[in-house]
Length: 186
Image (cartoon, rainbow, N blue to C red; front, side):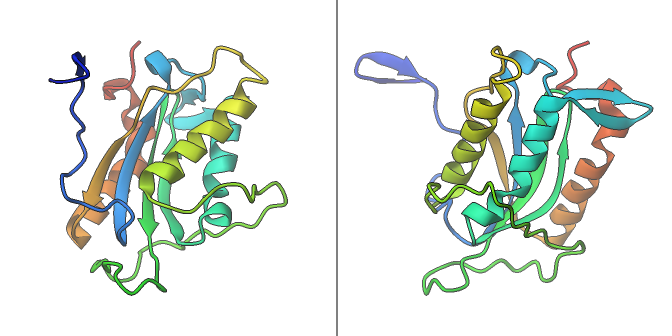
């Protein structure tokens, strides 16, 4: 840990020197505060979404409406966290770095909804995820005032097709492995 203004602060786990607005595929994990199971439960190896879980799902699928350069790949809402692959693809930017993973093995999602907010500003991965967490929090607290997210999020830059396939499969199979999941605090 280092000090800032004579106080300890946690070092960032972000890749030093990487521009998180660059074209790339990112594997993200966002956890609920204290890993509380706000989003539902696993029954017979299937995720059953609560009302808060439905909110998390709805607003995740709306991200491309707010950030036109964001392409959603695989995702799963779990009882107390969510995993997703999100691609930043700024095709009209001269200095954007292109991904080299080729065509996605799944259909890319680009929903259009009336409730899309025009106030979300485009930017980098952190802006997308912070705005997602913000809108989920506002709406989930209407149902459960105790709802909250863990500070920050986990991310991993997907660097090749093999990693993409492994992560894609991990996300898809997450409900089957819930009993062994490190996020499951039963």
